[in-house]
Length: 89
Image (tube, rainbow, N blue to C red; front, side, top):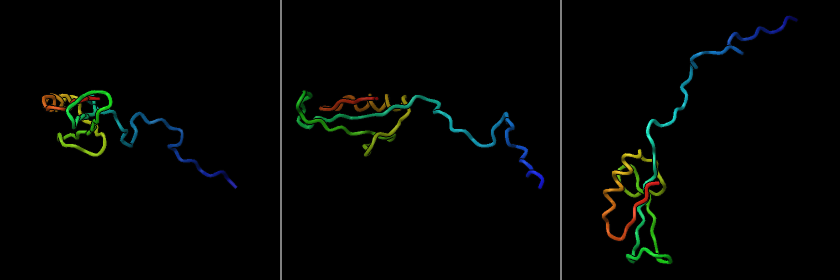
């Protein structure tokens, strides 16, 4: 019995892959978190509520990646709010 014919593409290097490859984002990405102090005291032992902020500037349930420029722009917007601290991670 003769051996089975092998496919021509096995072991052949292609300069351009036929399928798309995942690429890294073209800009830096960050998380935006808003820390709220209900009693207004930013000290050890006092309550702090941590709220992640989404791309549209609204609270979300879990951390979302945001382009760095947008994250810093939103952080400046939230910065003046009394009893809060803004973190760009």
